[in-house]
Image (cartoon, rainbow, N blue to C red; front, side, top):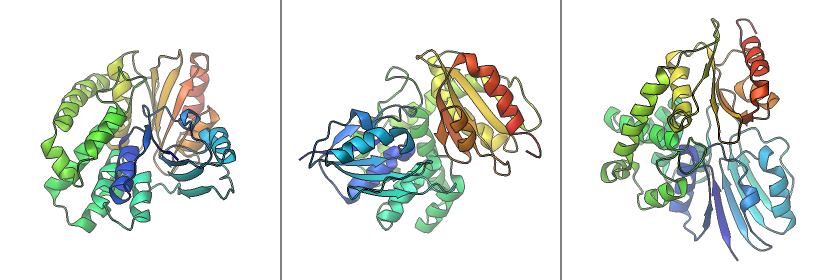
Length: 320
C-alpha cells in the first residue's frame, strides 16, 4: 500500500505538511505545484487500499478527483481553510476544514497535533498573511521580537517562492523545499543554517522594487486595480505585492492581474473586512476561490478583463 502527501506549494501548505510529518513520520510520494496549481488530486495514482493526505488545497476545485479516489477505496485525510462547497459524506474521508478568516491550514494542523510543532504554524501563518494569528501563537511560545521577525521573514519568503506559472519562474521547487525543511524541528535553526532564506530575500527585494513601481489604474477611494507585465518577476511578486498593499493601503480592496503562460490572467485579490462581499465570494464569480480577505483566480480570460474590473470597482465601493 502506498501513501501520497498532496500539498499546496506555498508557506501554509509546506508548514502544514512539515508539522504533520514531524509528528507522524511516514514514507510518502509528494504531489505539489506552484501556488495557483490547485487541481492536484487528479494527479494522484492511488488505488484501493492506498491513502492520501491533502493539505491547503480547496476541496471544491478537486471534488471530482476526490470522489474518484474515494470510489476506488482510497482513504483520504483532508486539511484546508478555503471554501469547500458541500463536503462529501463518505466513510473514507476524514476532513478538517475551517474557513474562519483567522485560520490557515498550518493552524488547523497545529490544533490537530495538540501544539506539537507550533513554531512551524507560526511560520505558515505569517506566510499566509495572518499576522495576528502568528503573533498569538508566537506569544504562546515566548518568542521575542527578533525571533518573531525572523519567522515572519521566513514565512513571507516561503510564500513568495510559490508564486509563478512553472518551475522556471520559481527559485525553489516546493517539493525540494519540503525536503530541505524536513531535517529541522526548529524553524529558527533552519533559517540560520540554510542559504535558502537569504537567497529568497535578495530575489524578493528585487522583484518587489519592480512591482511597487506599477501604478494602480483604474482606482477609486475604496478599490485599486493593477495590471502587472508579462514577466517572471511579476508572477513571482504578485502575492507579496498583494499582501504589502493589504497592510500599507488596508482600507482599500486590491486586485492584481498578471498575464500567465496559458493565455489568460492570474488574479490576486485582497479585500478588507467591512464590505458586503468577501474576496472569496467575488473570486467565485469568475471561477476563483479563496478566503474572505484573500482570494485568487487562476485563469481570467483577457476578454473578461473589462467586465472584471467594472464588477470589482462596483463591488468594493464605499457603502457596498
